[in-house]
Image (tube, rainbow, N blue to C red; front, side):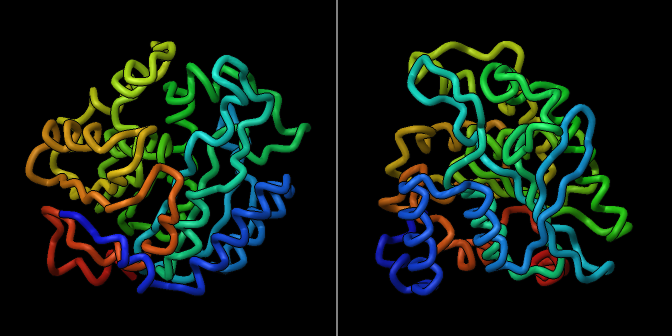
Length: 292
């Protein structure tokens, strides 16, 4: 199903204006943490730092009701590389797309998790080595750390299900976490890297043997209701990656292609509408609850 480009102009024009303004500021080398704080304020999300061994993770959260699901957002890979063969010293994203999506979610309980070493201050960066945002970006200890962070916040909403969303490489992390847990009620990815082996081969860059591959756990999440959004103009993670992944998962997964959207397009402007889309295998009786 294609979503027409003019749909963007009909939805949240004020939000889109803010997003475009913020993006232009990042192009002027605005401080990423200041920019993240501004995004978070739009969703009343509060900054925090969580120790989830072996990393200090940057978080932004809004938890207001213990009897509602926990909506978790996982950031993309950030600025892993400066140039094709030059590794960044700091993977903090300039645009923080995952955070921008979280800020658009009006659910009672929203948790944003930055990836390891993003927005991390020097005194908390002892575990931050470049391999954790290059070849080991989806390694077991990375996934375990972020999984532990979700368990931490679930203590504030005991017994409630998790609605999990990941952007780009955060989509890979989201899938890998979903394969470890039994409380994921709904899984969404946005421009998700759902098979890093295929993506790296496509771009003719080094493979990542030290990283777990979401494509390898597709059958383990076959019962999880899931929706994968992909831009039909995405040249970084083309839509075919999502289609192959969904085929491997089976009937509880589907792809929604967004017309004229690329990898770093204005997903936040559409997000409120995309959140309302039906998800395969979703329990109709729980549908309203999972969006609250």
